[in-house]
Image (cartoon, rainbow, N blue to C red; front, side):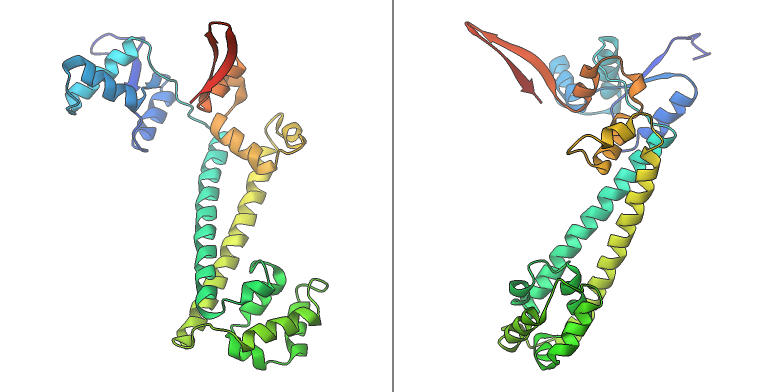
Amino acid sequence: MNQHEKRDVIVGMEPTGHYWLNFAYFLQSHDIRCVTVNPMHVKRSKELDDNSPTKNDVKDAKVIAQLVKDGRYSIPILPEGVYAELREGMKLHDMVMQDLHALQAQVHNWLDRYFPEFLTVFKDWTGKAALQILKMGCLPKEIAKIPSERLLWEVKKVANRAVGMKRIEQLKEVAKASIGLQTGTQVAKEELRYLLEKYEYLTHRLNELEKQLSEMVQTIPGAKEMCEIKGIGEMTVVGFFAEVGDINQYHHPRQIIKLAGLNLKKNESGQHRGKTITH
């Protein structure tokens, strides 16, 4: 900038992956305006210039500069402070949720192989009573031999009213007639224990993370009032501020609507007048 005696500079970039973020934050910290161009616009503009989609650094830089010159760019939201914490927190939240969903599928897989009748007695294996039975680490034939009073006692440790003797007897009946696999059972029990330990760890981490994010979002003006809206959960509000950032940086509601990927416009044709939402 000093070499070319430029004082008012706009740096444009194509936001591919995460590689642009460090540079964008560096520019922001030095009060240099940073903008991004849509990768799809870059691709289309290249084809218009020379009727070729060929990609190289020099050509890309020229196309990006042209788009910025024409005003076809967006100003990226680079959150700081609590907004940056919420954004990173929601990324971690999504990671934990994905791991949990994958783990739940693995437990279902185990049950389908070794105790397919289990879910006819307990509809949800993540319930307190069902989870307590599974944590005993017993296969169907072993459950069938355990006294009903002992099984009920195990369940009452965590779910005092949810399950009675009738459900326990039903569990023992299906265990006796189970068509679950009879091979590889020793390691199968280790597999179940591993899956359940991992499940408890992930659920604990998720609860702790949500508690932390909840405390953070309450420091933002207006967040408490948003949480009081019927049908709006606290994590929804966290996700909103994680993506939008400080709402004081917006001058019109349409800016947030556009950020969500919606472009509201009128649709007029002949006698018809309506509105459409384009993505």
